[in-house]
Image: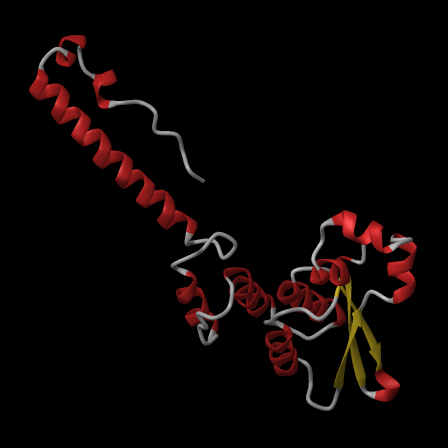
Length: 187
């Protein structure tokens, strides 16, 4: 959203103003103020979109009825707001998927096992348990009818997956990945 403000006020006045110290200093000072003002305007405009909001995210949370938690990352807080915004309306399989994808920030599969009164949410786009799973569980419990149970399925790196990627311990060391990166990336 940031626009380039590379023109100076001196560009708009006759060239002899550059020779006048007072005029040139005054225009340079005003340039700095306009640059600051334009940066503030750009920053304010970023707050109107959940995906780019930073200091204005608390207002989105307030509108959606979400308790603001400073311990969560901006990404988690944005996901909570996006999912809450998606969370209104008739509850369908696609609606549940949209909410789950919004909180998770990745792809999910939703399976309905009506004969057992169960909805299964499967996290398909990454390994491990999402960091904001409790937030997702809370919003899904809020929108899914109470008589339906919710089950969650996660992908984990198995020994077979790990072994197929790395033949020896030296292959693992050569990647310079941390342990957490290895078990969550599956590579």
